[in-house]
Image (cartoon, rainbow, N blue to C red; front, side, top):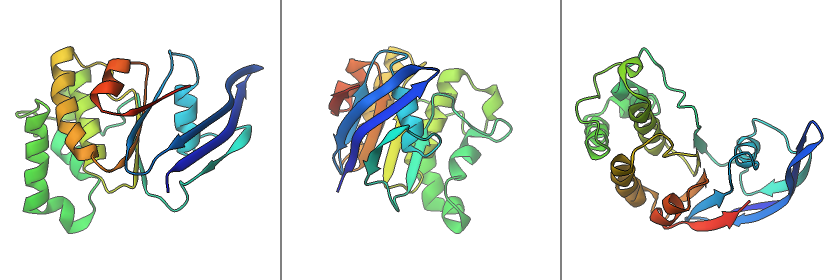
Length: 195
């Protein structure tokens, strides 16, 4: 069963941001919701995560599901290393297992951060932090992954490298990506829904 969004409405200061928005997000598929900036994408994202309430409407299919998110702001622990930030998503022994550490190392290499694993996040550029945030989400346990402008701040070459890495990991998983970039949505092989 996927996620059903029915007649979702949200108003801020008399301005309708979401006006009876409806969508079907299929299970096991990457779906991109596209709209220009300022048209309610992040508001929808926050409502789906339960960080805001809609004025009206219904969302079904998220009950008892483990959600993970990558926000527009990376929300990393600045004083920890890139590797430690990624390991935070795996509790106990799994986060310290040799197998998991090997996966993290391979992920850092795949997204062009080979020599950054031991560096503190505060030393990294914005694009590097973005890639760490994406890796952290990918390596977490989740049923549904929500991404808000996940490739923002990445140059074309880096974006292509990251897209190649994530495409394989998103196969047959439920991923909802919010973007204004059609090229990114198409590169992900996503079902596209206009907001």
